[in-house]
Length: 118
Image 1 (tube, rainbow, N blue to C red):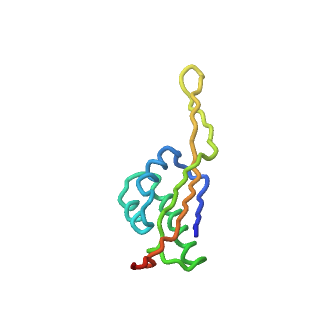
Image 2: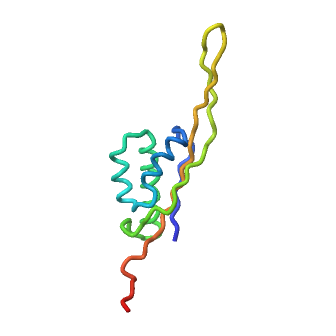
Image 3: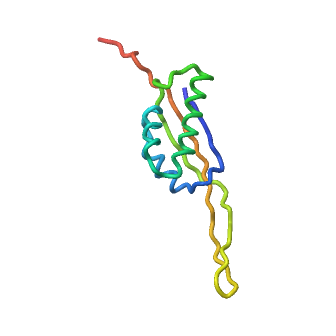
């Protein structure tokens, strides 16, 4: 069973968000939240909120304990860019883009204790 949570239009660039997402990919959600608490990056807060949302979806909708979950995938997509200009000398302007991210976290249930002895 897959549990999915989305966050869209996050005001952190996708490149910076992917850097943090790579650090927690494949971990259990409980361990991933502990890892995110000690990382000093701007993308940790939106990733932690999305991960907490995915855990809440699993617990409330499907009655799955958070200890039985594992992060299957974390997808960071590009959102729309806010185009801005900075005024510089001689009446010209330098354009720059403020990038946004879309975060998708997919959790899966890990079967525990179902190994048979033969």
